[in-house]
Image (cartoon, rainbow over all chains, first blue to last red; front, side, top):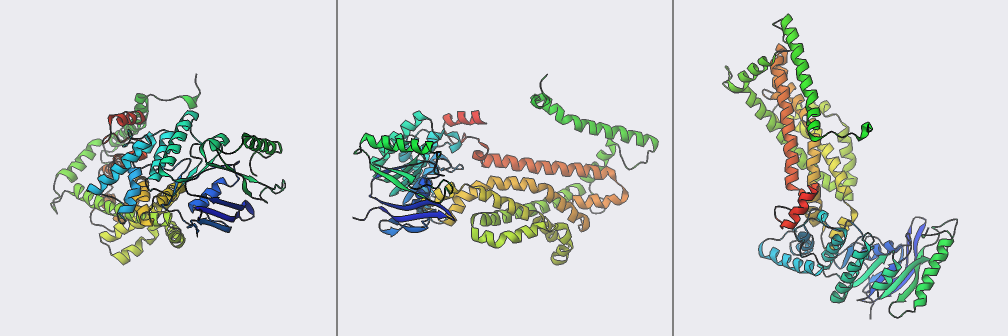
Length: 265
Length: 288
């Protein structure tokens, strides 16, 4: 069976800076992958390559056996930490916009019955994510958690195969984070979408995913921190792993911190 | 005693402080004019307020003896038409080229240097060319305004478009939008309020170019009248005309601001109170 995503010896360098080196991975449809790692370790770069807004310098990144398109498309949805929603549109318009793009090529705007149809689809989805009471508000009238709910609904209206979440809950309060975890797990089970999510929070990563990736550098040159890139140093199927593994990762991080590198540089 | 930097005027004090210099200016003029007129009743430099009223009455409310027209309103209509056409055209040009240059790297690479060069040419220096090419009619005056302010609007809008966060543009693409759809549903609505801001900022220059063009070649218009009666040192007409121009400019600025707030409530953080539930009305009230 062809995996949904396959990375074959993927490198990403910017000039002399090597961000990712030799990343290999196979991901099947329906997995929930959480990606942890210190800042600067290429988590976001990897996500951007899946999105299509960045491409590997070397190696291949395949989507269902073909090279991933080098621009974003409706089969791969994204939720950023911030700025994911359109400030000039109401909540309802933000979500129905995805349908308007698809059904009205020229004006990107629907009228009459087709508009009401699109809006009722959008309303249904918004009710699922818990925004049914705020349909006509503008994003600036929403809290951070509500904005992320909106951004998730906005992505899901396109029924993407892959949902990319780039530290989506990083800016939220702990209590609201918990709600968001339940929301995203529920949506994932319901839609069967494949999720890639980066996070700073190891526990969040363990709690949410079916599989946890740790991005880290294998080699480190203290005089030239950008000489070596990061790769997937742990690839752990969750639910099956031993608690010692978590301790081991945490211990490695402590070691790294003691060695004077709290991040990847 | 608080530090000076921490002292805030109350609302009433703010209005009072704002009016104070204006009142002082009028008072100073009045005293100076009185003193000069006492010495020489035929002094033309600082006419009394009564002369202003007479002059405006003559120009605005009595038909002109020769042409039978109400000159004041004729001048106003002619000038407003020119500035309206000039500014409107500039806004349109600014919108089209600003979005094209800001959003499409290929267009930006081709056009941006040219726009920068054009914006550096003093428009008044090419006024003779405009008169030669477009004749002495309305077109050359409108063109002066367009050439004067559209490069500024293009450059400003290009910057605003480039300020739109990359996340938003990527998000639109993941929702299936093509370039044109991104323009009409994302970029255009996002920059329209900023276009109105740019137009408001350029109004001062637009008036400058209008008055200059009218002063040199026109048969009617506010600038034309001011420069015509300058020959007779008719300060009783010039000063009210200047005040009238200031008032018109202020009114245009204010209406653009009000229009913008009404059309783009999200830009000003005003909630969707008109169409939404009472709940969001409350939010709007809080944020307003």
